[in-house]
Length: 172
Image (cartoon, rainbow, N blue to C red):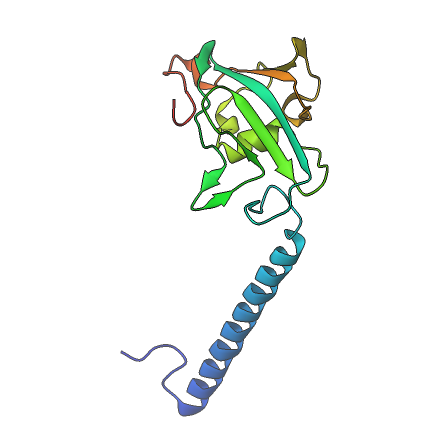
């Protein structure tokens, strides 16, 4: 079978030249994108490991997590993966979350939920809420972490309305 553009030697040359240029452009775009992301994320505590960094800012808070009215455990070692310790992590399953970075950073509850792989998309955000020391926060998942504060995250899953089984986070 003769592929389109490969029968005539002149067309073959043009087709192969076009494919080579297209491949070169694609590889160039991928390299530039990778380099740009590494530069942009160099000081982003949510994307970097803290293993070999000098940590000057540390806070801890407690988090209680409920999904559809049932307590969900937050497992130990959230934020630890493949030898990399993230800036938001847990050491045990007692509900204490830690945040650490080289300088003060406005960590949010949502950042921890993202590192925890909590499926927020499966939750009804209009019925869910975050309480800080017993008072509902208007910022929901954008509520900033404060040292020593107690947070209670109450989530209602979208599946709870349809009669489907309720969702509980991974590791519970």
